[in-house]
Length: 429
Ligand SMILES: Nc1nc2c(ncn2[C@@H]2O[C@H](COP(=O)(O)OP(=O)(O)OP(=O)(O)O)[C@@H](O)[C@H]2O)c(=O)[nH]1
Ligand SMILES: *[C@@H]1O[C@H](CO)[C@@H](O)[C@H](O)[C@H]1NC(C)=O
Ligand SMILES: *[C@@H]1O[C@H](CO)[C@@H](O)[C@H](O)[C@H]1NC(C)=O
Ligand SMILES: *[C@@H]1O[C@H](CO)[C@@H](O)[C@H](O)[C@H]1NC(C)=O
Image 1 (tube, rainbow, N blue to C red):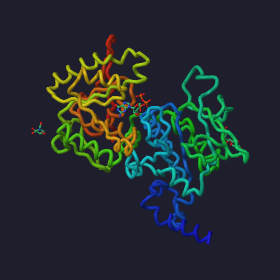
Image 2: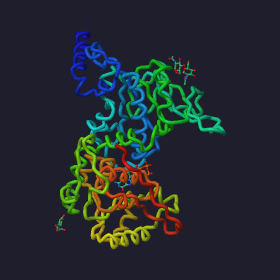
Image 3: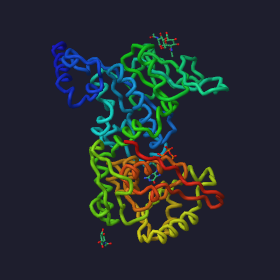
Image 4: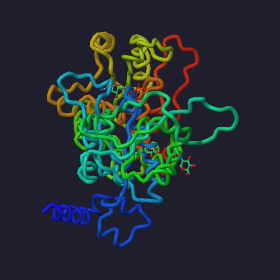
């Protein structure tokens, strides 16, 4: 009975391969026998996690770096990337909302990711690999001795852990740790790797130094981009299309509150990102100014490049005037006191305010994405200096084909001398 079950699983996997496991297409060494037994029965799994304090938008950037490593691995062997469930994010503070073990499909269009690399949700990995086990955990770290003088060198070495790794052995000598909130998950082996360099620097270790079938890279933010801003970077970035239900809410808000539709505003959006290639400046954007005002920890630090609310409103009014716009959409993480103050200074501001049910459904992460989607469709956008939330909006507007002059703008601090504006990164197709 059990054997029959396994056989059915294998056959099931085999027949599903072409549709749900694009890894098949990426693996040059594949034979007919591989297809019969199912690539799923043979492939290896790459898992990863990021330093807990990092926010949602920095994590999106780490995904691009790890995807690039996966592409390198696929040149030699069939691998799949296991999407790290979302949770325990410092900024997700709404009470009574379950915000752990959140699958990627909540925020992203997973079929879009699969047009770039083979990915699995965590639950799919557990089902396919036969249980909540990670064979090898590598905790990535820098070099204890720091950067050595002389030429920059890419390197990776097995080294003692500089800090005690956040895993401990249970009485069966399995390693227990956070594992995205999956208490039942166990690591079979944990060790530290010192890395210096781009994501693919660890590929030889995964291919040759370990035969573990599932390998997790913890603290994956230690890996740098293989080629920031290149075609591979943009392919992966473009594949991170927001989930359909979030786009729908954003579009409904645009149309109802901001009089903005794709037809009227020149957007040629395709859900299938591989078919979307629009020239810069082809989209006009909806008839509103959008602003991203990052507050909270950005203000507590009293940073020079973040304005007071009065300063921000002065800049908003000036932009409305110079662009002949009457509406302003505000995305912000300001807390209630600051928000009231902002409403007093800018009574006409429009905001996406979710109902309790919407917040339950979309969660803090989904609401932030709706804010980003609305900002991405504005005629003119202005963001906050060095906020990755604003950076992701820049990229989205670039993909949507808006004129860069309307995108790469940021608020200046009240006392800031030279207020340098953000860098323009062009999509490479
Ligand atoms: N809804 C909404 N949430 C926001 C906004 N700005 C910031 N946030 C929340 O605060 C978090 C912090 O911003 P992130 O950019 O993701 O965090 P980060 O990666 O540390 O990046 P920084 O902005 O550079 O700190 C976001 O993920 C959101 O949860 C906003 O305008 N609207
Ligand atoms: C990987 O294996 C090679 C060859 O045995 C060895 O020189 C190298 O130090 C190993 N690297 C790591 C990170 O274990
Ligand atoms: C655990 O991993 C380390 C580093 O890859 C390796 O040297 C060691 O043999 C592994 N231990 C077991 C029990 O597999
Ligand atoms: C909405 O936009 C259309 C053109 O895009 C314009 O003709 C119409 O007057 C606008 N409606 C309002 C209420 O502003």
